[in-house]
Amino acid sequence: MPDSKGRLTQDDFNKVKLWFDEKTEGRLSNCPMCKATQWATIDLLGEIRISTKDFVIGPGVKALPVLSLLCKKCGYMAFFNAAYIGIVGPTLVEEEIGHDK
Ligand SMILES: [Zn+2]
Image (cartoon, rainbow, N blue to C red; front, side, top):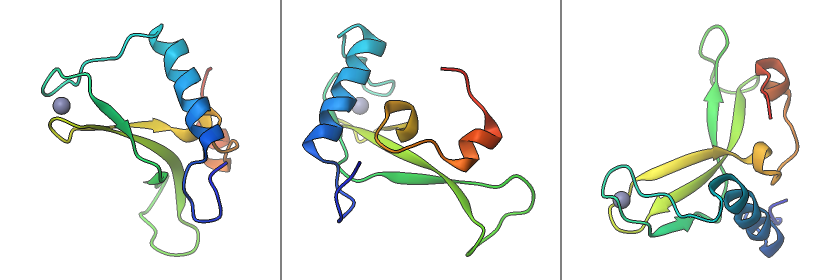
């Protein structure tokens, strides 16, 4: 769980490393743009807003928590659902969307 300022903790980074090692079998993936393998984990979570009907701004907005990886060579960014990695708990939106682990 990120700290009071929203920054990932060492425990979060450890979870991220374990999750990626498990999913990639320890191999760093190549950037789809420049083919480098120089990734940095952004230490703040982002969000992707979800709209199931009309787009909403303000109260009632739903969002998915996002972990961002940055290619240090070209700036390409990859996004992963932070709940899948275990950094934050499952969200209502995920329950509504559903997913298979
Ligand atoms: Zn790149």
